[in-house]
Length: 409
Image 1 (cartoon, rainbow, N blue to C red):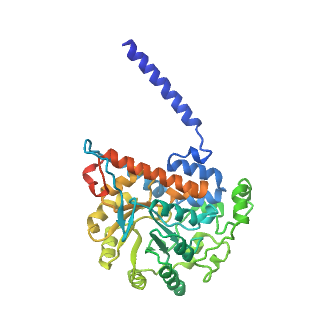
Image 2: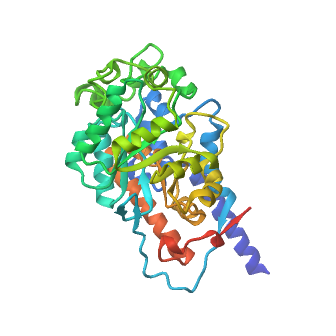
Image 3: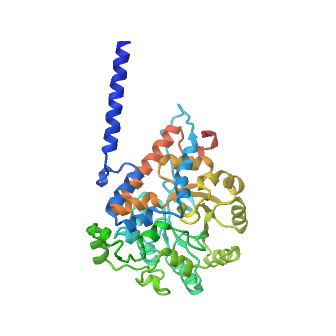
């Protein structure tokens, strides 16, 4: 009894020290980052607050953004043991291209605002790891440069503009650059209400105002890189709209004035036919829309709510995944997009029936924190987490995962 009491006392003391250390813990350098949340903290420290809040923020009360990640916690993994998980093979084929992991780096806009290396850093890391990645129509590196420099699987996230000439040009440029897929974003016919951006006055490119100039001044490394490196541009748009030429505009205004709210199924089908290659719809959340997409003959759908940045109060992608997989998983590739911050999130999505999982913030925080080096570390951490989780689940490949390994709380 005395020994047990002593042991308890030692454990309690250790726990108290651990909590104190945790409370005092600060992420100050890249080597301090051991999970995606750490990159978020480092990015917060290194970015002016309008730029950080653009990455981090979402629509209205941001409840959906929080739920995107929280949803994974409502389902637990049940492992199998003594099955020999020493022959791990995570390679999978997504939209006709083999990748090393069932993980995709979702396309995101404006990346050279977050770090001067921008899309070039993300493309380089994706190629090294054999992963799908995408660039936005609002990318800060051109379709042509990405197609010429990187050979890994890549998609163009396609926004449907009122300008039909711009729409056609994006398709032809993606064809000429030998992109592997177009992902038509279907959930941005109007902008979400991104209140953080309204409060900070964030525009692209950033506009310095009395309300935010002090934050930019307190981050001189970011400011010097932005001001004196390559001039900011949106090269996929600059020949058609002023927003690509350096004129400051909010993302909300861009979406509300440039994008076509009349986008419909007929327009999506015409785009698929004009493109003629692998075609994905990004932003599918209902079973009815998933079925209609499958009937149209798309190759993949991304179950996504745009990171919670469009409609607050909507369902999380992981919450919707099972019923969508049950409805169309035998006809199209279903990709879970959003909320992924851990390797076990990927394993849970695959167990639910997804072909792959993807996310944007999971690498954007790392890009903002440390450029290519940061993205490399973030992807390596997620890769290690996925491999570790698979081994602990007693599985050697994604095909061995199923809902038998999941339990709802």
